[in-house]
Length: 95
Image 1: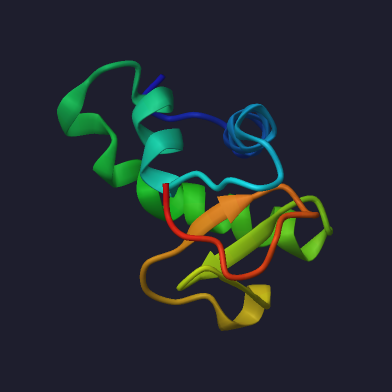
Image 2 (image 1 turned 45 degrees about the vertical axis):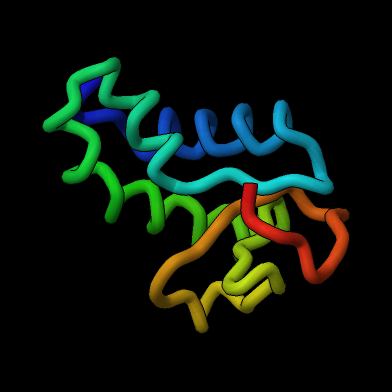
């Protein structure tokens, strides 16, 4: 799936984050790699779409975006981030 719909991206983010649990986070690249279906060169172009979907999910209260292990507001997302379902502990270390 090299050009997934926004709904498919959001679904994969929530699936992976839920499977990992509220006390752990996922990297957006894990979602992009899964959506690329094993095509190594195809996952990087998906990163922007994955981040956009994550921001939308965070705005809807379905996801937390972490920077340096702490939740950040969706409008303040920049740089390296991780994702988790709401309810995790603050100060988490990256998996």
